[in-house]
Amino acid sequence: MATRVPLAFLCFVLFASPLLAAKTFDFYYLVLMWPGAYCTQSTCCRPTTGLPKNDFFVRGLWTFSSTTGKPVTKCNSDPFYVDELSSLEDDLNSYWANLKCPSNDGVVHWKKTWKTYGVCSRMNETEYFQAALELRAKVDVFSLLDKKGIKPSLLHIYGASDIEKAIGEGIGATPVIRCSKGLLGLFQLYEIYICVDKDGKTIIECPVKPRFTCSEEILFAPFDTNQLQNVPPAADPAELLFSDE
Ligand SMILES: *[C@@H]1O[C@H](CO)[C@@H](O)[C@H](O)[C@H]1NC(C)=O
Image (cartoon, rainbow, N blue to C red; front, top):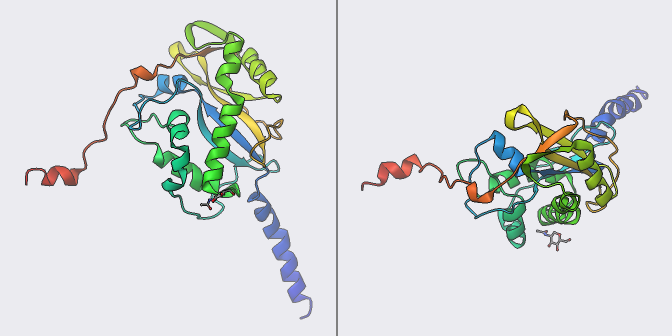
């Protein structure tokens, strides 16, 4: 009988510890998104909060495990309070807008990011979104590319390795670029993955690199915020029903 308890405990340790470890993140991917690429594949709408910047957007600050190479998500059910982001409103609307149609205010997307990744970060909500926005501003990928003459244009095609090099030299670590299919089926710059220490501040070499398919030469599609259509959400059917009364 005396051996039963330690045995049960041993079983618990053996089986549960990999599960526990999988719930521990040890680095972030800062994922930046080029809206010009996004909008060649999807119809884009002008956010209800106004025009975003003509720049790379934050897609997320994703919690990852270097042991498993997988995302660490939904660690708890901490709530999302939009009010806690009020001090970051301008930056969120400029650089973390949602261009999906119909026009929206981005809140659903921020909430999803918080509930999926933010709750695993050990930062509070304000700190988490602020960390991501500060990282975006610090790396300033658009300026790094611009300095090397890499500008959004349909008249040019750029070496994927030149883009990686321009960013890499600027941030002191190797980024990974993700392409999507753009005009005429050509590959285009879509997302940039930059690894960040679990402190949420320090850019590091990636412990695990995501792998994506790009061609050697890629497009950097233009993005014009003035072409974003204002498409209001469909009226609530309940309102229509009572509008005649
Ligand atoms: C989040 O953390 C910051 C800094 O530690 C603190 O000032 C702020 O009050 C915290 N916010 C909440 C809602 O706990």
